[in-house]
Image (tube, rainbow, N blue to C red; front, side, top):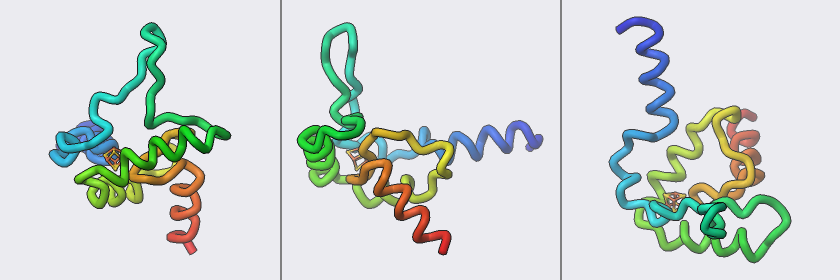
Length: 103
Ligand code: SF4
């Protein structure tokens, strides 16, 4: 495999795009639509605690929380999405876990 192809394969793997567990994700299909005035539940941003709790509740009820947490823990900082709840954690909480792992 060429260096370019290998790099793309690693990126796709890190993004979890091909992971089978994604099919069972409770957040699947929850992407918002600005045009329809429908917010993305998993993207509460910052400062709206009720919205963060709603997003986290989706994760607590998710069948693949463990797989998702493992994937989220493997994400490099530059690939993590600020303001989004992933695996039951805010981006600040994921950054904190990342910091603790590095020490
Ligand atoms: S744990 Fe949360 S972010 Fe991860 S797949 Fe499930 S609902 Fe989505």
